[in-house]
Image 1 (cartoon, rainbow over the protein chains, first blue to last red):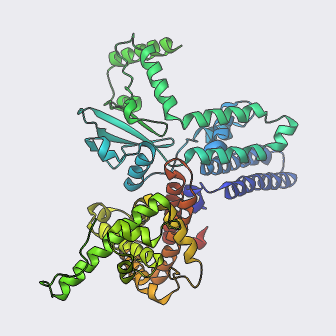
Image 2 (cartoon, one colour):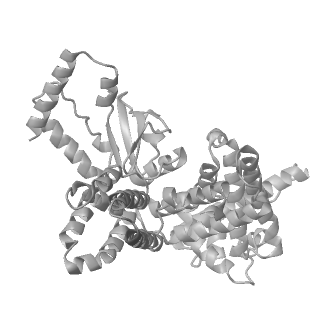
Image 3 (cartoon, helix red, strand yellow):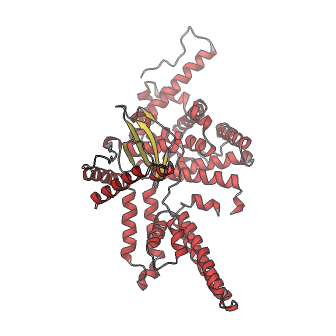
Length: 275
Length: 219
């Protein structure tokens, strides 16, 4: 099980098998629950039901997580549909995060060249072969360009786009019964497809960064990284490197109430500007 | 490029003569590779190769009987180069097994890149049992064995490190087969920057590494 989970990227067939197995597993445990139901008294039922929901949800989350890509995106969308799913399922699905497999230094270096035509050491004065952060579809490396500026270089895992395209085909056929009955509107799948494929395009992301930088220019306490266009394309994104700390880390250091208030006010201002 | 292939009267030493011979062979190979990259393997004649290398066609045959012999010489040199590159690369000493194996195959592919058509032609020819390029031919076993030993040593090193089961000689044979399979996949790969090959190579090696470390029967 473990084996497929971390490497569950295979072709259409193994992934189809996983989706099928997931369906069979869920139906199987549901039948089991119904059969047990006959023998359980009125008092045992709600308890068993909650137990079943919890187990089924975890199974759903684990399998969808292993499949990554569109199947997982579907899970994420479902997690937003409060009302249709039980509380237990929503909690499990909220844990889903898109995550491409990690790249070792040799692969990251080669993938950089495959995207931009040159090795990182030819395009940067310094390039850290080890990533300092993982991105949903790849990983981020520290670098220094030839002007001496620090940069963050996001490199996409090879062939993510075609892997997602093959998954979408699969998802469309797997969802055929749902499409016929109208439970899974085609528009939903189209939406997933659009969202996922957009995420694989770093040129688009660079555009978004520029858009936000212009939009938030009026707020002097907000800094949006600058894109180095000459060092970026659809699979590599080079941005100016910003030192910083995440909000949760900052809160762990127990800042004073006045600072917290200021942070709160500024966050609200930034959100308001974006709206 | 003119080359004096006859050892001059002064240097009678056998070492010197061998060196000169090797130089000529390399000059012929360089000329041939240039032509293969331009016109392709099949369309390049031995006459064109000898002209480009600046020697008589008859002299060429003293070194390489056929174009297939040239190809064999090419692969032998490529293999030597990959082994030397690996051994001289400081990064590889720190890398894990999947990365090492990835780097070996990728480095060889990168070197083969300008000669894609030539490699394709050689692959096809090697399938014929009568071909000099056939991997089953006894004369080619020496080269094969050198490669297999090189891989076996890398695997043995991993065995001594951590939770990697003894795969012995079988591991080297399996990797040899995998290497050829990746080359044929790479030849067909039309994706941008051949990134499909990169993904396949990386995933296969990581998967195999996991299976071997965890026990493949355990899932």
